[in-house]
Image 1 (cartoon, helix red, strand yellow):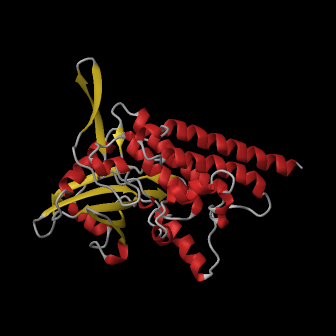
Image 2 (cartoon, rainbow, N blue to C red; image 1 turned 180 degrees about the horizontal axis):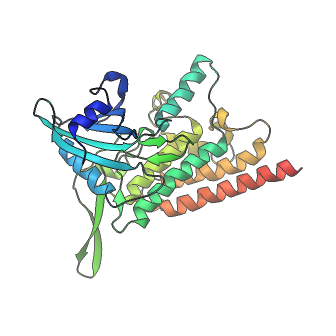
Image 3 (cartoon, helix red, strand yellow; image 1 turned 135 degrees about the vertical axis):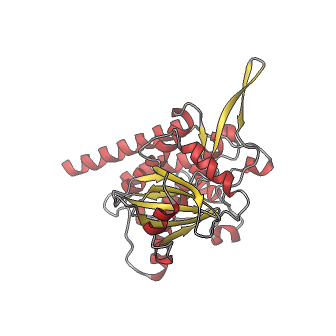
Amino acid sequence: MVSYDELRRATDNFGRENLVGDGGFGSVYRGKLADDTAVAIKVLNVGKTGSWSSFLAECKALRNVKHRNLVKLITTCSSVDHKNEDFWALVYEFLPNGSLADRLQHWLQAGKDGEKRDRLTLLQRLNIAIDIASALDYLHHGCQVPVVHCDLKPSNILLDQDMTAKVGDFGLARLLIEQMAGDHKAPISSCNFIKGSIGYIPPEYGVGSKPSIAGDTYSFGVMLLQLFTGKSPIDEGLMESEQSLMGWVRSAYPGEVMEVVDPDVVSPVKPEMEEQCLVKILGVGLWCSAGSPDGRISMRDALWNLQAARRDLVASYLRRLKQ
């Protein structure tokens, strides 16, 4: 759909100054196409086992989906480079505010260094969470064939110029198909193996369970808790105390949630209103990240609960303004 030469020109010969990230199966460069469209170009590492499968999985998952909270795949390139070697690339819309992981790391590092942090308010973080939940609800319940992302984590959540969050990197995505087994429909995956990222992988994947929408829900729950506590699921302090992020939050829920919430989330002017909202949000995170798939709520229910929390929060802000 686009030539290797055009992508080479768009990135100044894939110069390091345009390199914005490295992933499991390749590198991502910023660039501009001939029509001046700003893009992010994911170049697959052809020498790595699984790269071609990742390329096909991403194309298959994204070719029939369209949602405001999914990173838009503009075009692809399957060609040869100047060395006459295979070259595979995916061309996405460019999102200028980087990834949620970058934001979380920036907040954490700035806090350690004593710098003034670019603080995101409770409402802004809640909006990001709702954006992600909206995308997952669409993938799980709004597509003709459900899509399981399989690698949800902050580095795969990108932010546009308005801080709208979009889910990206579908290199491990799986399409679920319905296989008739007598009178029953047995959901099976288009692939029998699963990978993911430490801290966000649901526990059932570790004992051989196949990809499922409940697995994505678990990863979302972990991210939601991380977004509002500022703690990574692989935080050194938690690991030293042999405590999981979920266990740490659960130990303070609901009466002492302010003890585990990132201090930058709460405004000193109206903490009582925000505490009620945070109890609801962290509750959603704990429901989603339950150890058993059967104990998790669906992404549709998670989305509804987060939207209800936002409505209550906005209403409380408006009441305060009128006083």
